[in-house]
Length: 392
Image (cartoon, rainbow, N blue to C red; front, side):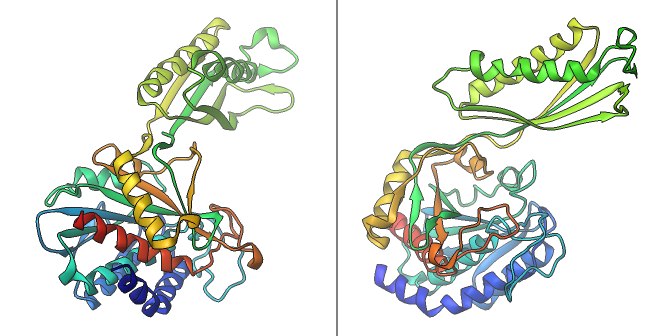
């Protein structure tokens, strides 16, 4: 079976490169993936793969095979609001939008996996549910919506696997980790209100700028003194704006924006309360007011130990032991985590880098690109996992 999959992967490789380049040239933002969805369905229709459209807006779900047992594979399809700076033939033709997170690779690889599985459909010992998901880059995340719409039912998968491009890994390799792998991510919005006025008359003001600085400083104790040191936790503020204000004017209002990330759902909820209490009490202590809005984002992503062990075994067989790398935890986030909260799941990294060809730019940068040979692994390993998981 392994050799059959590798043979088909090589036969359709140029086709997959074409898919990836088309998608890269025509990126669409989260929940606006209209043409992308249509393109996916055209390819699935070409190969007579049954599918439905309209999930979470523009998602597509395909089913291949027969039988009671079902496994799921997932790819995200949206792009980012970044202007591409690469000088390549397949450069984005949509100004200000780019597949800078590799979702074009995820989608093309999944199309490849679908084609492979369709060609080997008579040898499947069950069903493979293939999920092309919109809106990964934008809250509330397409995964959460698709789950509410029933994507994990009728049939219910026994497991789900997803992959993500990873420039630090050389092409031909994958990275994997058991247990907690990625953090939850929440957006913090703090509005500090006081009394503005002339900067030379601070006694007549309630200084919102000073209060904001005190709030940011005080909130650092959340990580340094309130959090369990064994639980990875990050609280960072990346934006401060005032309404009014100048070199000699204290503004009436300051808005602070940041992110809170951790890898424990119980601590996450407790931390939200602490953030509110600290911010509001610091403001109150100096006569000001404070409003705290926490936009709850993606949960922690946990790789199921059993699925991790199976995927690692299959990947080692398919790629060779030297090409399966153990990864550290990450405090970045992914909405694949919603699936991992519902059914046994595993999320792994697909090597896309090539130092000799200077393909090293990180994701979410305007110079991000991949060694397209990653499509061989991205399609083949997904198909191999599905077939092996249905067999065992």
